[in-house]
Amino acid sequence: MSAVQAPPSDLAPRVLSNDPSDHDVPHGREEEWRFTPIDKIRDFFAPGDWGTVAAASGEFVSVRPASADTSAVESSAQWVATDLPSALARTKAADVVSIDIPAEAQVADVIVVDLTAPAAANYGRIEISAGAFSKATVVLRLDMTSDISGILVTDVADQADLTVLTLYDGPRTSRHIWQWATTVGRDAQFLGLSIALGGSVIRLQQSVRYAGPGGSAELLGAFLAADEQFQEFRIFVDHNQPNCSSNVVFKGALSGESAHTVWIGDVLVRREATGIETYELNRNLLLNDGPRADSVPNLELETGDVVSAGHASATGRFDDEQLFYLESRGIPENLARQLVVRGFFVDVLAKVKDAELRDDVLRRIEERIGMEALEEQVSEDVQ
Amino acid sequence: MSTLEIKDLHASVVTDAGETPILKGVDLTVESGRTQAVMGPNGSGKSTLAYVIAGHPKYVVTQGSITLDGQDVLEMSVDERARAGLFLAMQYPVEIPGVSVSNFLRTSATAVRGEAPKLRTWIGEVKDSMAGLQMDPSFAERNVNEGFSGGEKKRHEILQLSLLKPKIAILDETDSGLDVDALRIVSEGVNKFTEETNAGILLITHYTRILRYIKPDVVNVFAGGRIVETGGPELAEVLEAEGYERFTDLAKA
Ligand SMILES: Nc1ncnc2c1ncn2[C@@H]1O[C@H](COP(=O)(O)OP(=O)(O)O)[C@@H](O)[C@H]1O
Ligand SMILES: [Mg+2]
Image (cartoon, rainbow over all chains, first blue to last red):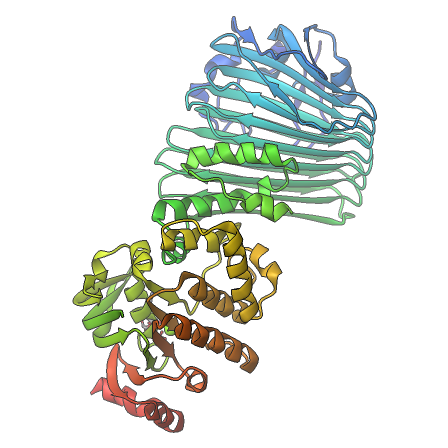
């Protein structure tokens, strides 16, 4: 397979090829790798004798042996690997976990997929397809005791409504390098929510493109980083179709001395993408002095003929006045702190319409921030 | 019967530039069933006094004492002071994004009362208190102080007062920024609270207007970080007529 050149833009990936030999080995000074602690993930750049991520088969969920040929989901989503780790995962994963929502299916229950990793280090190939006019919510729970280099390709067909929640939980030891690419069909709706709590290194590259006009994409993220944790979220929204919308909201809370998070929000509005709406926001809350939060929004407009285009980014220190106000009402400091952090994430989590799922995520976040009691806050906000 | 006793209180504000003395020897006693008004010009240190009593971390006490029924308030953390029976209705209440009023009220009532209020009676309690302050029930779903108008913020402070039922309440310029209707409603809320609980009130104000609704037993004039004159309600009328100038001069002397 030979490399093809992507259309020229500083934001779009340059090399599109599933063949690892077409990609350079990152050295850390490239724009897309400059924030990443390369030394901690060098083994992700060479083919390894790794295991493959699996999942229990079930309704909508199946596991099939991987093949070098382009899969139906890949070709429909027009997905091709954009860098060395994604090309390696594409060629080295032995199996593909595939979640298929048939056309017109209205799946009321949340489809929960527990991904399992048999080895200490694993490749992962996940595909999610939502058929035309279908509606479903998929949760991918990622085993965080192992390292994973994975690709997740999502294809949302015309007028489908798909929510995908990925949850990175578990001890602060494993490393996750993921590429998540989504294609949104004509008048389709996609909501992708990434919750990152565990891991020593999480690097998620998430991209969205549109297969027709009228599509809507919401990319949301909630992340908590403590000491020894590095988390990087690189968003690329490729507005390549007219009258589509994108809304990107990532919120992070950082604590400890050595936590480091990175959020890159690249939005490219191509010449043909007239009448679009785009907004992206990253907010980071530093719970103490010490952690580092990098935040870089990039909006590249090739047409001025848009409905709206904006971005915002802010990193702020935990507000002691809020703490004082709550404490002056008798609320002990620890609980006051948790209330404020929880409140910080509420608007992101309120987007999760399934109450049980929302509560599960909240419970996990609360465990991380040490909160005992689950309050009815978000349920109230949604009702 | 409760007594908040402030003796020879000196306090400084701590900023990056260092410590600046603000309170310069305050003596004041607030008792159950009585309302002490503290009136003074802007910048005289009224809010500093209120914050120091509540335990705001930006201020340090350099001299003197504060006790509540003989217990050393200065030894207590901010939340302990609230649980001991002190309440501060703030001049500038703080926004808490993502925390709803209902969640906040229940969490603080649980903390102050030492146990979670029974859900059924609690809902009625909140509803009645809100109705008394002419607050729409939808208010409970909003985030604490976020996007509140000046009047809504002050009503929300008095709502907390009526639910947390402190022994001694400090009201820091609860009247400022209120129109006449709102002032009347808020004052009625305070009066209802004191009638029901016999709490002591430290009423801090810049204007005499609120004293038409909340009758003080004692009026103190505050200037230059201390009380420069003490009298009965008639002292407020002197201030109304003559302004603070005479007293600010007094403070400089
Ligand atoms: N947090 C603070 N930082 C800096 N200066 C302060 C702070 N709080 C109070 N001050 C100063 O202390 C003085 C008294 O302020 P304050 O107590 O707010 O007065 P009042 O409430 O009577 O208007 C003012 O000169 C004010 O500038
Ligand atoms: Mg003041």
